[in-house]
Amino acid sequence: VVLDDIFYFGDYFGYFDQKQLDWLKQDLSFVEKGKTVVVFTHIPPYNKQHERQGFTEPNPGLVVVNRELLYKILEPYKSFIITGHMHESEYLTDGGSEIHVCGAVCGAWWTGPICNDGTPNGYLVYNAKGSGLSWQYKSAGFDINHQMRVYKNVRELPDKILANVWTVDNNWEVNWYEDGMKKGRMERILAQDPLAIELQFGKDLPKRIPAVEPAFTDHIFSAEVAGSGKEIIVEAIDRWGRIYTEKIII
Image (cartoon, rainbow, N blue to C red; front, side, top):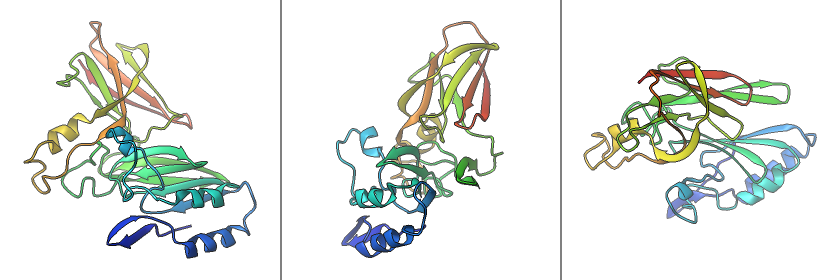
């Protein structure tokens, strides 16, 4: 199902008009309860960017103000809402629906190879099998197994390694190894992606659109490297058990 949730009234905000909601309710009346329903919109019904920025309420141009009406219609089903708009990646559940905020092919408006949160320019690839749905992010110019970027010697956190795992949700597991020995889970933190800082931070960057700035994101993982190890491997395991790894030399 594709819905238009961009409503103009002097400026735009996220909104489902009653005509669409009535149509969707009628259309889904022919679908057996419990089935999987996938809805595509541009603006995500909800996201937590405002919380990451320190605000208590979201900008109405970045969420759907009457999203509860959609959630009520989708309540009898297993529902996924696939969205964009934010030029960031976020995977969350709200109102009983899984919401995917899918980065952007253009990244941060064609200013470079990444979005504001460090997600590579790219798109999600979905696989539907029966009532199940699985997905992977496809970064432009990379193999589909490229699912993270690992950093060392970050200026603000010199004793830590960081991993940006852009498609992560609460069903993933992110571990780290030092010289082949498993050290444990990495800590999920709120931070800016180091590459995004390098390419986008400051009034003169990026050159094409200097107003673009790196975003705070919570798909950054951290671990303190206190030993004398030389090789660090970060391992991310998604909800289907697929394993992705990246290696750096200290």
